[in-house]
Length: 314
Image (cartoon, rainbow, N blue to C red; front, side, top):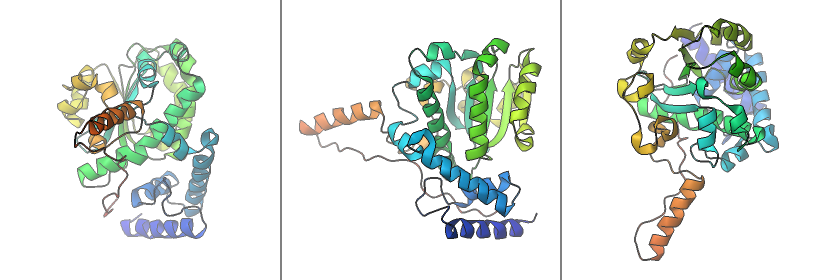
């Protein structure tokens, strides 16, 4: 399909969504070209199917968790919430800088997963809320900020899944949750994975992959590269060493922020002021200084969800 034809369908899609009340100005899902194109690509530019997918996504966004995505996001800053360190210790999943194309890196370390340990300090319901907020963060903050930094539309992420120390037993423990996570991503955040590199795959990976593959769309499965243990040169060909965590073969350690997993480092942090407990504690300190006569002013909440660069080509 030519670019001109795709642009024509994109215009018709946007007009139809607004005309039928499926999309409104100010909706947090976004109305920019890249957001709408993700839904069109997911349904091969079929207007009817794309519209159905978008409507179902909007319904989910209004009702998930009984309060909707926007309320969940107000309650939980994805970079600052009380259970964050416990979640990251038992279910390591985080965004960290970008690859050479400007795509944000999304790192998953499956070998460290321990749901039994996690659920002693965090309920399964609360854990799922943090996963929703993490997924929402990608389209609400991560991708728009990456696009502004790159000066071009960035609509996908580079996912790295480290399976070192991960076996069949751990997989069966987390199978249901992983399936729900895949489903959420494909149904409500479509076409956001540009590339998936699976590293340190164990000998049991064939069994794991045969179980996972049916959950993935054909298009998603085609983006998967299994690199085994000989992966460093491949990753460094795609990612600058200073952006890649050192345990993956890069040079980044984010020592001042407590390590790459907790740093949240990336262009999305530029000018960002959060709303979690650490941010509130910092506000109190600043306010106390102001009350003592300091001239320092409080900074208002900023979330990197400004306009994306104009789409010129696909």
